[in-house]
Length: 232
Image (cartoon, rainbow, N blue to C red):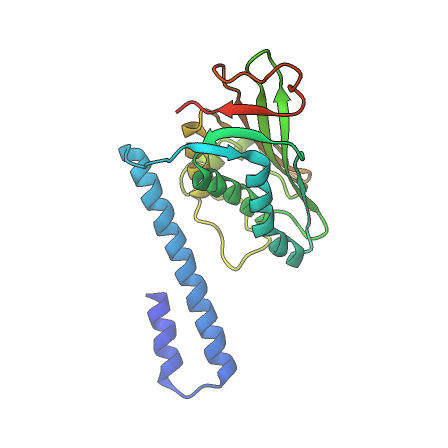
């Protein structure tokens, strides 16, 4: 209805080019927001119905993080936020759905971008979490020095349509569904999203992927390369 009203006002009387451009930009932003909301609602509906299909295959975590970082580096630069992608030069393989994990990273990075002030920082990192004889682990984290989340809101942000603060960047606020979808993706990969945060100091989200017991790391390579196999 709002888009239609804007269009009707725009064509009712002659306007200059700047007016039409601004109107089109607002309509595009509104359309983009609605499209994303519908996509997230459909994804969650399929997940609730048990019909969302994930296609698992070998994924190298550092490569995936570098791919996500390349997509977001320009946006962080425009917001004057220092963006760091801290990944090892080695290979850390998991069995996962590449597109789903990319979506999870995009959700966490977008939240960090929205709620981190200019001249602060966001770090995307991948690190070995622990080593065992045959079950190594990898931890992926997104850490920001943004506005933080109050303790009473930290469990609520994983509920549908929950938004606890106004974003600092972006033309529109989020749908309140991103973290719900991210949690579902993590759970389907045999993990969970963890959160540490305090108001005024920032937030840290992280996911740990456990190693495979049937594909042990060869002796002597524990600190060089390992394979992670997500439970389905």
